[in-house]
Amino acid sequence: MRPAWYVLKPRWARYINILHWPFSLWHLSYVVIGAACAASISWTLLGWTLLAFALAMGIGAHALDLLKGDPLKTGIPKGHLKLLAITSITGAIGIGVFIGLTVSLWIIPFILFGGAIVVLYNLELFQGRFHNIFWFSFSWGVFPAFTGYFVQEGDFGSPLIWLIGVVVFLFSYVQRVLSKRARYIRRQMESTPEGLRLWMLTPLEEGLKVLNGVVIVLAITLLVGKVGLII
Figure (cartoon, rainbow, N blue to C red):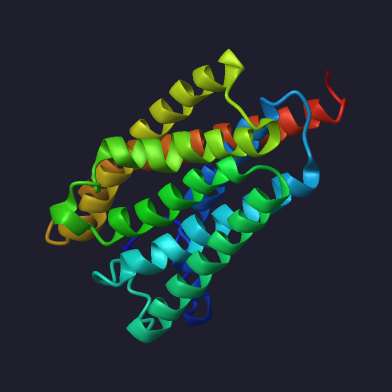
C-alpha cells in the first residue's frame, strides 16, 4: 500500500511527491480565495503571492517535514532536503520583501510570521507546541487567505474576509482530522489486512478528495467572477 493516495510510483517523481501536491493546491487556493474578496485584483501581485506560498508551503515546509523521517519513502538525501528548504523559504521571504517595498511595509509582520511558523510547525520545535490542529488550521488556512487579501487591499476593513477566515479555518480543521487518521491507517497499521485498511481508508480519503476539489473549484469560480465572466 502506498504511503499516501497521491504518491506517484516512478523514482523520478519523488521530488513531486514531497510537495503533497493535492494539499499544496488546496492551500494555494486559499490565497486566491482571500484575494478574490478584495474590491479589485492586481493579477501581478496575486501571482507573486502564489509563488511565495508555493515556495514556502509547497516546497519548504514539506522538505523540513521529511527531515524528521521519510514517511513518503522518497529516499531523498537529507542534504538535498535542507537545500530545498533553505532556498525555497529564502525565496519566499525575498518575494515578501519585494511585495512589502512595492505595496506596504505592513506586509513585514506577515513575512515574519510565515517564516517562523513554517519552521516551528514542521520541525515540531518547542516540544511540538505549534504542531497541532489549531496552528495547522490557522497557518495553512487563515494565514494564506488573509495574506492574499491584505496584499490586494492593504487592510482588513471588509467583514467578508473575516467570514472567509472562519470558513477556511474550518475546512483546514476537517482536513487535518481526516488526513491524520488516514496517515495512521496507511503507515501504522501494516499488520492489519489490506482489505480492512482499504475499507477504513475509503471514506476518509474520498472526503479529502471531495473537499480538495471543492476548495480548488471555489477559488477558480471566484477568479472567473472577478474577470466578469460570471458576475
